[in-house]
Figure 1 (cartoon, rainbow, N blue to C red):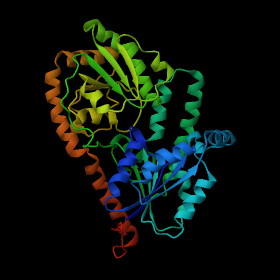
Figure 2: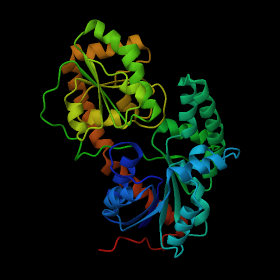
Figure 3: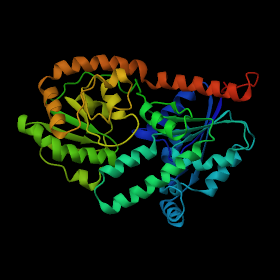
Length: 409
């Protein structure tokens, strides 16, 4: 197949979230197919650094410059339109024309649009014969509705509410795509109901088994870890909520407990949590070691959507997890049914305390989950299924006599 990936952010470095998914997608599909990339870049440093790293694993790569000032001006100009702010932020005629230019010869089998921010660029390729795939990753309207309930700041609440209304309408703009993907069954069910039964397919988050292989390292008896991309509000909210509402209850029973908040670019409200027993590390090079040094990994997420990398990565390493029901709602039933979960501070604290006091028992149970995760949620397993689905979509649309372009060897 000849595949073009359209994504709003350079998928490098592949540490968390959407960058991690796209990087692994390119890496896997490039083994047997021709994979090209179109993305934005902000400055020359980004172009000559992160973009060049991704370029190494693609057949070809294209980038269009987009500065923060241009993005903010675009949002300002469209403030009274009905378009979501995050769509306006990435609205670029130059990007659309570049997409039109590189697809003009109609040589691509698949054009994959990553995140709702790229839905707007479908119109530039409508005349091509390629399969058009939209990967929302999450049901954004569901995420924002939960965010709205959790947010207490009245000004932020106003902005979130407005964006939620715009997204709810705009999500239906993806109706013409040949396939729409999200990363969990919960997101799929939610969107399918809104699309009058249109099939919403699954492309779940996975684990890189080369990276998340257990290592021989001693864990610290009462070390609790929470990881994530900290500018993402669901993560910063979870860190603050655990530190203020749950961790004191844990410390009442286990005074020497330590809470490690690990993740890049922690906002001020997270940095302010730092104390003798709350450690805010910021970015770390080796997240695997941080997991393995910990007695328990927590996911006290109060709102959000999708499947959380922090949960499946930890379980792949055999590290016990305590979670809210929401944080694991996107996982397959056979996995989430075996993860201790609670939704009130007192119940969540009781579970954390129990894991710390009975860590060996929980570790054995986590080893069983590790085997399931590694079997069903490795990137190779997930993306081999996705690869077959793309080939099936092409065959259905073009007819089985139409050739599928393989990567030149």
